[in-house]
Length: 232
Image 1 (cartoon, helix red, strand yellow):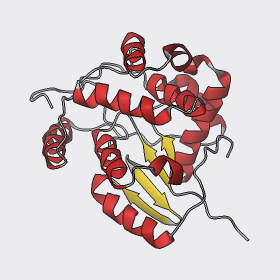
Image 2 (spheres, helix red, strand yellow; image 1 turned 120 degrees about the horizontal axis):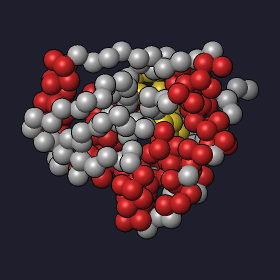
Image 3 (cartoon, one colour; image 1 turned 60 degrees about the vertical axis):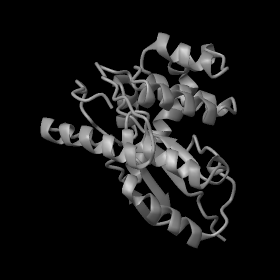
Image 4 (cartoon, helix red, strand yellow; image 1 turned 30 degrees about the vertical axis):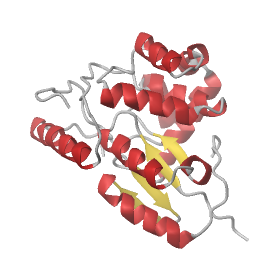
């Protein structure tokens, strides 16, 4: 008998829509970490991209126009207000996304993924901090009562690097083109406004096996100098 795969959520610290969707998801399913698999997604650095290419995979990349970016700035403020969230848009200047996402992978191994995740999104989306900077992430971890050393050293770990490539390879296999991205069986849902559809399908699917990692397999006028990439 074929074992059903745990429903999964592809998320990113980069995307405001990922932050909003997961905030609402945790409101609806407080124990989501126990029933869903969370898989990080980000724009890889050269080292990760090369390892991904060696597996015959890649991350789709489409630069965002200024017009679309300005629309997203407006839409995120609107959506944040709808969800009752306070938001300060961060300004990303050549961010190194490996740092927070690989740190999250290490935090998951340490059993503190949820605490780390909540601390990072609060710093980034409520206070506008650059969580891709080591000094900032150190402060964020310490404020959350976490030891920053194993988190900050995650990108230097060959084992964590391999796991990070696993995550992006799964995104490639799932044909992900934006974040947040949800999957239940063959059903796929993209974006904040598809969260209800995902939750409805999740209810239809019924009880799921426990989630577990599968490493093998708004400030007005702010303008992000980085491209939007996987922003949902």
